[in-house]
Length: 190
Image (tube, rainbow, N blue to C red):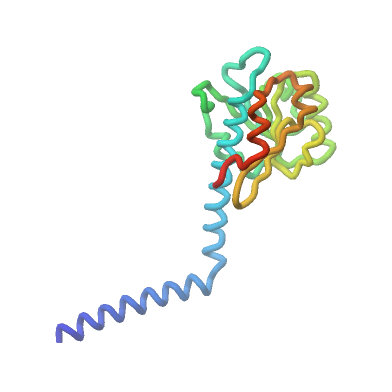
């Protein structure tokens, strides 16, 4: 009688596991958003590491304290940046969101993290920042030819970046030469 009871419990547990597995396969729409959210969170953390790393290679004419980072436009990977209160060096970081055409941007930001903007918004933003020592990093599919100093490339496997040397030279922000080596290799793997 004891053997039947143990066998019944084992069979019941196996059936419950099989049923749970079937439910997971039958409704992938429930599993996919969770996996997608986890991947987006990993990418966000990797992007944050890359952005904070870029800051550690940058020198402003007058060292900002705190460094004022402005998030401009809709962003996909900046959630962890908005939570941050310090840079890798331990120096304070103040982060806030601004609209693309906010007139405060030029005077209120030492660095801008640019999300998805249309061409006109990008042109107006870079016009407003022209002649000011502001480090700009683009998240969206930016060809990295106009305005942005750094352009992120986010994929499933890694986060890398390109450097626009012309924009760096015009920005007034000095970037350590070794950052060019980093732009040529893998930056962070999520």
